[in-house]
Image 1 (tube, helix red, strand yellow):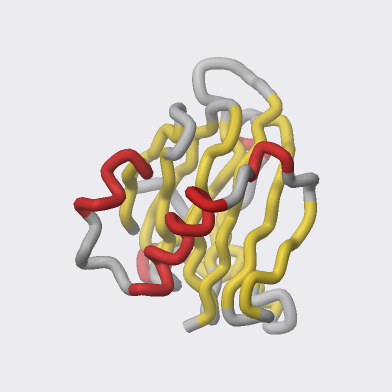
Image 2 (image 1 turned 90 degrees about the horizontal axis):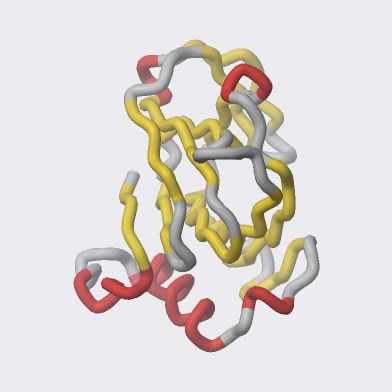
Length: 150
């Protein structure tokens, strides 16, 4: 996993072109105007989901990972904490192949606070993540989750 902010995008030359395409997309599109939903950029190879939700207590959330996609979580408005761990250190609870959704059970290794516009977290298939956790106080956030097919 990689945590960063778009203002340092020129420092991330080591990232794949597909991941850097997320940064370009954000620079060229005003995501604050997007409604909640899924937006195709390149079919099922590359798309973005816009989410709005209220952050909640850690105990109310679940662990997830994906086998076919890289997730790039990016804050548009609000603040959110995301717990992270490695899938190898967790137990698989279920896998829905159609949704590419692995539900896991385990403990966090760390917590990332996405608190500034442009903060992002890149999660690869080996990275478990638990999103929508209160950061400072419960609030409704808006974020983009870019999905990049491997």
